[in-house]
Image 1: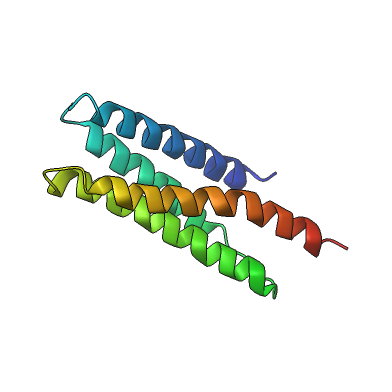
Image 2: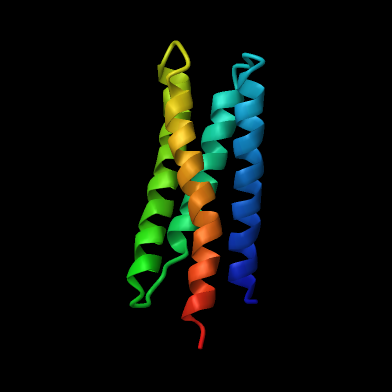
Amino acid sequence: MSIMKKIQQTIYIIGGILLVMGAALYITKWTWAPYIYIAGSFMFGAMQMLDRYTGNNFILRRLRRQQVIGAIALMLTGILMITCKHNEWIMCMLVGCLLELYTAFRIPQEYEKEKP
């Protein structure tokens, strides 16, 4: 694995940890929790968007698009945490999490099918 790939993987993991921490700390009404969440979501989403699929498999291209939409929904959630007075952000987070969870299982399955 190249050094750049290791750096991307580290940023991806740190972003995921910050996502969870920001969402969990939001329950305590801590002022900085949404900002931690936003930092994590942008780190997580940016690394997902950098990971490209260049093959011709239609299913993998569709799954990658769904993954990017999930990442965008997670980023939008952080903005909604700051701007909305109530808990409207929860629906956006739910959509993002469901798309991320679905693609996390389906993409490796499709990569295995693609191997000769």
